Image (cartoon, rainbow, N blue to C red):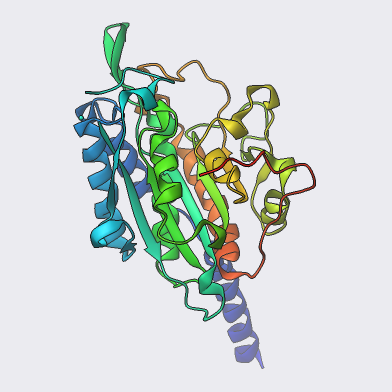
Amino acid sequence: MKTVCLLLVFLGSLNAAEKPRTSERACSACIRAHEEFLAADALNGRGSGTRDELVAATYVASQLRQYGIEPAAEGSSYIQAVPFTPKQSSTAGNPPAESTTWNVLGILPGRDPKLKKQAILLSAHIDHLGEGREVNGDRIYNGADDDASGVTAVLELARSLARHRPRRTVIFAFFGAEELGGIGSRYFLAHSPVPLNDIAANLEFEMIGRADPAVDPRDLWLTGYERSNLGPELAKHGARLVADPHPREQFFQRSDNYMLAQRGVVAHTVSSFGLHKQYHQPDDDIAHLDFRHMVTAISSMLGPVRWLVNSDFRPQWNRGGEPEPKGE
């Protein structure tokens, strides 16, 4: 009897030790590695439509290839060339002469015969401001938080989801020239790998490189949280998502998600931007990132997003929450 009791105690302690492993954890080394490349001085701030932005796009494409994500751009490529004119880039920065920006598109086909017709779009933007006005001897606008942190989050989600093929199709989109007015995401609307009506939801990830002091340090917030039932439903399934604490900033309208929302897709941005002073400055660099926060934040989204891509839940706009539609 004593031997049996000891065996039960041992098995119980083994099970207890294994329980924490059921909660997937983001790869901290991967997160740091992505940031150290994308926000390095060597990329000169990933200016919209520059060769440096193309280098960043090529890096992202190589990571998708490594994870087993299939290419989803034209010609069986990961990289989608997006032509534009200086008139399209009048909202921010100096328009480049290189009139091309680049999206990176990958796809993980769903395994369910019915649900694979629905897609979940996970996105971020690759570019930042490149080189600009010198501040304290530095003129490279690295964009470690804006938006290398979002790119890193989507890459981690891709790595995680690729391990077990989901029931729904998942599209991973990394948009170019967001800083010049969402040029890459606008092009995506007309060149999506699936019809826009088949995109059940879009989660954009932008500026999650440090905690927002306006909310619990473990929380992320969702732009336009009150506009649809997507945020509350993800929260029910473990996402530490709360409403945007900065409604006056109108962040819902200030990222690539808005282009899709105007076309009827339930689309929001996940962020923890606390209006820090490094925004659009050269010192938005590695030194100002909180990697512990990034690991915790990305980890907190792995399970809920995995639920979303395997469920038949299709989010809906709340009454009055859908933005005014915009034609093609």
